[in-house]
Length: 524
Image 1 (cartoon, rainbow, N blue to C red):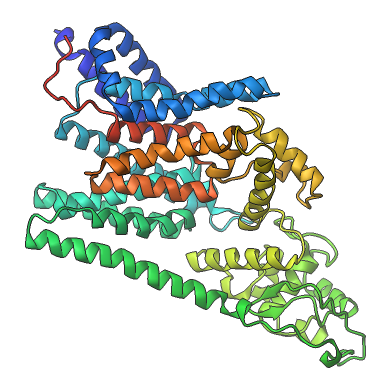
Image 2 (image 1 turned 90 degrees about the vertical axis):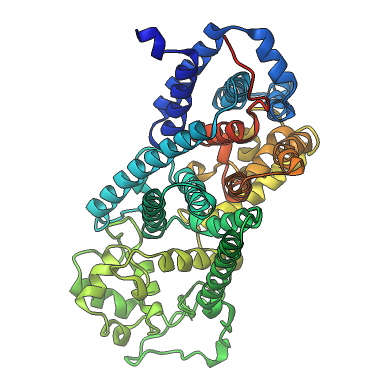
């Protein structure tokens, strides 16, 4: 009786379901699912038929060539331990397309079922994230990135984007019943709420691009669908415009800032103490220069009278009290002296103690704050205004700079699989970076990382994985969204350098592009 239900097909579908579920929930589940698929592939045999399917599907070979280049990169690597680990992490690029191309093509119902499991996993994962956020959002030093409990937060936001586009496409052009579309609409709203509430900036930036391009490829089969296509693409376009305008308005105080003339700066406080003016330090808060009109002799005693945390010490988040206080006062547009200290309320003092450096965002956890922080980091990096340690956007600029230098060492063939960290470390030292050793990371840009490791040859191979399926044409909206999401994520992330990202790339790529074309074939 059991044999009737436990067929090779059933095990195959179970393995794929485990893979999709594990992407959002558990790296262990990903590993178990791959072992299950591998065992099923071996036991089901019929290798002649499988080989025929493999040889007739160029998409499989395209992604395999990219993986093969990592093997070739072993020839000139100096760090085999890192190289072997890299091959292990990217093993899904070899295995998952193999498992998928070897089996009979998934039916429409099977594909929808698998993607529904993927969405379910995201609902559960983000649900735990919401719960964690509600529990800890008021904790001192809390970072919303911690709300992704099971997998890296940026990978989770990318998967959330993909799920939203698929659900929207099903709502618009699917033939499901009305109550199913209603549930799908509620799930879309919930996932959008997650991205906004948890300040998933990467996901929010990429989503409108994914929606815009996905809706452009919807085939017009009726006037209603034509309208949906128009409004869908228009929504993505309007979202991009509104988002861009908001970013410009947030950045305007930084853009409009005019450096004060040193001769026009007042020399003394109202109490007769001399001001310190670090005019060359262009750190800003709400358009106000932080390191001018400073009087430590006045702010120190005033602060120490109102707080148990020493002026010359650190706050509850490990940040310098002095630096945080001066940024906070600057955000209010007042001077850093006894007069300026008088405007601080008890709430303001608590905010500074907890590491808040801008009065606009006291007690708030919003996407607006995340956008402002990003622009602030970029401004500081551009103006060399102090350390950018711990500021993810500014640090990425430094990563890219060092990564580009590492790429130029061997631009054609790369520095070898596994050598990225070593050559990056050498560039950090050579360029006297201000980042501490623990913050000297890989490029955080998949294009640069691939170039450093495998050179232009490897980079072209990676890009061709996407160019091939685009050139082949006839893409579904969710397939277009997958391409857009991955390519845009490559700009700010080493997306496929971890197990979840590599599985996301290989797993979804295989399901969308590596299935055999002939549906009538049957394995015994």
